[in-house]
Image (cartoon, rainbow, N blue to C red; front, side, top):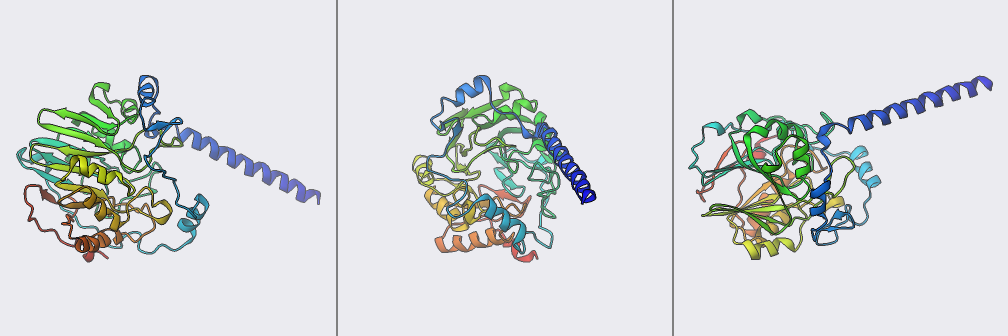
Length: 375
């Protein structure tokens, strides 16, 4: 008996030592600059003046619990870790082409999608980059949420000088530390939600290059207007939650309006944006990584099409899919389902492959159902 108690004592000491070492490791890892920096000083003072900032955090206009009724973090972990989730990742290679962005004619009005929610736009001579993620990972833990095969043909070295870097919110699959640091010298102006600029300053960007906005504000540059609009989502890096603002944009040039949706759940704000800024020539909307557990903060495919209709959009480009497995649905379900609903609601749909040049002046450009050929 004494031998067993002695063994139990040493086993407990070893177990507690391992737990302590793991805790120390986590604490040290959280000091990595990729986790950013919380707003402070004058930036925090401005945040506190925002109508969206209540009880020391940003809130959505509508009540938006993190988990829908009947779900919890424990049930979610059970589903993700113990339930089979077939076809979350493609067995084959996602197709792509490599448009030479460095040799573009500035007069070309184009859009190039990089997979998930990252894309490049060139409008009337101005170059935009939205939520770029080129590290091949959508998580702060290396190798944990890797890009699908074939989805990473581009690197930061393939990018030209960027006039406007638009960031919708500070989640890792939209604000990628490795990418943001690597493109610093190529970016002229960063536009983001309140508080997000704290990350950029921490990562070496000049405060003079950062424009932080609340919802329903406008930044003007000659004939270009960038309107910041609502989204129904949340924010946060590491253990911080909702200390920076999430948003969407309407990019308005002389000849067109493009809605940059970021991440959002379906709500009345979409129709309100449509009333103020519509009609929209092209709505680029969240379609993927949805789940009943968090249905308040992401569109399901039918809602993606309904959102485009509420925005009074002439055409829809679905994003936030086909590169990372962040939810439990089959990888191709978002694009195949939104394709079906676009036919039902008679909404013109843009379904480019990664890297394909979308001609924004050509309403008759034809896109393939490329996902049908991927296993």
